[in-house]
Length: 428
Image (tube, rainbow, N blue to C red; front, side, top):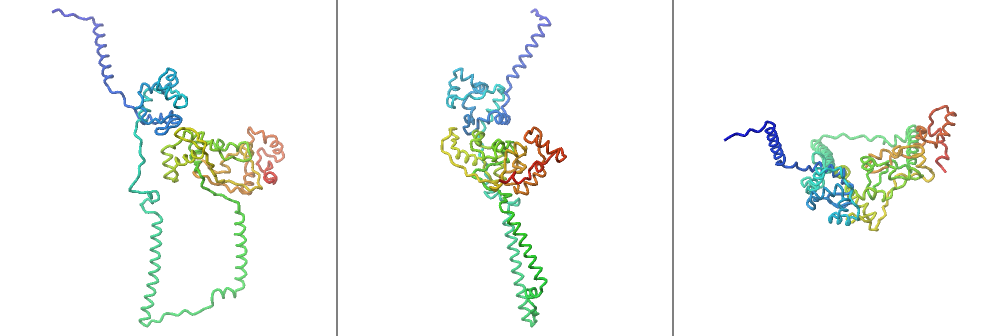
């Protein structure tokens, strides 16, 4: 039989083709990479959490187990461009669109199929039940590191001390009886002049004591009267707990977003609950780490406080509608000046450029808001004497500053030198 020899270039082509087929077969035979729920959680928090939760309806429906409700190919189309899918006449897309007030979901064309797979994998994870430490019991949080509370230790020490005192009295009584039984005479104390009588007979001590009592009484009476109306450290419990530490600190919300009237009014307003609902319409639960911190360090259930807010404004989280049934919130005022004092927030915040923390302290660190400064007349005067007037982009003070700067021979003037010590500035 005659052998047929293929040209060299043809042999190379055949070998290359076989090699390509083998590689392709090996690639397709491998399993597709598994979706990553951890990566999906990060994507969910960044892209989806503003409108969706896993187990509660928000702006959009709850997404727990969404991978069992729809095919992946359909979800790819819906997530990347829901509006296009609705316009195509897709039955399921239009049903969702109509059920959710005909508001189309935001398109995410930047998400790849792999990203969507990761998000779906995260939504398919089972719901975690809260862990309860049965052995520790409800008092575990109040126990010391050794498992025994400080109250128990102090009580035991007090009991031991009492027992020692009783034992000393018993020992003395027994020793006295033994001495009497053996005919030992106990020393008898001679009666001397009573201390009060000796004191009364010494005129110098009497005069010095009377003067000391009068001066000390006047000093303490003056100090007590000067504290009337000074509520530094006042920290009332509010009907709905509001954490400045989370809002102004961790989330960086500007003070004047909520207290908007401080920019242009004499008074700083108590924010209306509508301002709270700008965010909490979609934030019904706090993050797990924040929730754990609140429960462990402060004993506060933030989610319960959000429920109080919903009850006050009449918000039905299940239907995402207002019921019209509202309840007044009786906030407790913290900072309060006497009626004879005039203080203008806008003059300090807008014209003066003073930060809120100057008077109210580090509010971004306060879990419970309290009065940080004494707010006394002396405290205000010292601030006026020490605070230099800010002139950059401040036409309010610029003209008068130029005149007074020549008068005092200074480049920078304090609020006191600009008239901040005149009685009529703060008193009617």
